Length: 206
Image (cartoon, rainbow, N blue to C red):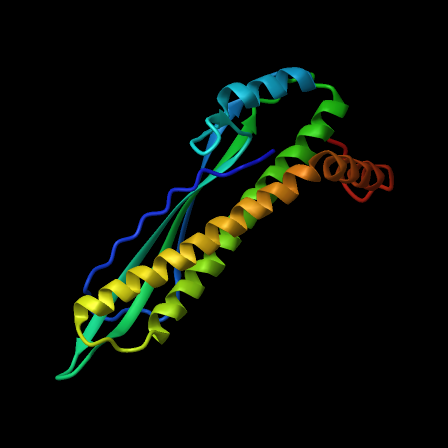
């Protein structure tokens, strides 16, 4: 099962208004995988893959995430409101990179190409889920009602943030659960599809 390392950080600060849409900052890093056989590759993934704190074990891919909210407030004689809010999502996608032996078996290469593409798709979906919630958080902050004081407005912002990040976590866990249950059938289906394309000359041999 491919999970992600989820590190959610929140920083509320009074700043000048900036862009009106949630920002995404994405980087990639890779860890090396060796081996000639499927068993050797699996052992390398288990040994070298990123360790996920929520499970305490290593996984073939991971996505680390941090949400940062910059909020500015406007105070009047009788109330304080959120004047602007910008949510930035920083993600680091960690993926495997196979040190392919010179004379590796074509079946092993086909399996690796299928597996690595599925790992990347899985982690990119984690990023998409997080980005959707970052936008939802930004919209919710901007739509919040004025409070009597700015302290109350800050407390409301913290409440809105906690609620949205909880929804985010639930969606990520739900996605991992579904993906884990369908993993074997999905990989077999993808391998059959790739083999058919190779046989039909629609893609080069692995």
